[in-house]
Amino acid sequence: MKLISTFKAALLSLGAVAVLSAAEATTPAAPAPTVPAAPQFTEAQLLETFGWFVGRRIGMSELGFTAEQTAAVIKGIQSSAAGKESPFKIEDVGPQLDKFMQAKQAEYTAKVSKKSQAESEKFFAEVKAKKGVVALPSGLCYEIVKEGSGAFPKASDTVKVHYTGTLVDGKKFDSSVDRGEPAEFPLNGVIKGWTEGLQKINKGGKIKLYVPSDLAYGDEGRPPTIPPAATLIFDVELLDMKDTPAPAPEAAAPVEAK
Image (cartoon, rainbow, N blue to C red):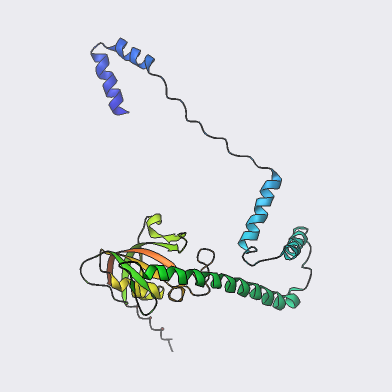
């Protein structure tokens, strides 16, 4: 704005008022940007979305509730919304409810694990056939994307990395790159596939890790982003490494005065 004011002042000092005024008059004003109107929803639509959110949060789809079971859940919600007490004493029904939900969880885990294992077997057969991929006895596979220089990290080191993690279907579940900030952690404090794999690349290098589930999060996974028995793929750049500082000694308990 200061530059524009100075430029106008210079023109005025040269007696160019008419030229400036004509230029301003003939310059069309930029049209105001059109802001799309925010969509409007009915109360029923808002409440339906709220119900969907509740169902998603408690994993009704993943746990495989039938239509009859879903109706029973809705009945309980309606009872709660009406301010009624629990239909059964919590101390009586609680143990059986826990057992029921654990069985549903186990059924879901087994189903997803079976699917993941089949996908992983096919995936690793294809990966191991790729040129440049190294398969280790542990089951971990890796390929060096870019060689680094200098020393390699030790399992006891703290590493600073940029990484992106995806599932075998290409779905991204985590990325320090997207967050715009490198991650730093002790190498022996992460999944086994990382502890072993990052020791294969030196500073400045890039590596691609193909991590089977038993070297990652196992049959439990990390819902909702990482399913049970999922194989994980990581693109990692080793930015730096250093010795992990030893934990500070615990302070001695104060001696009571006698």
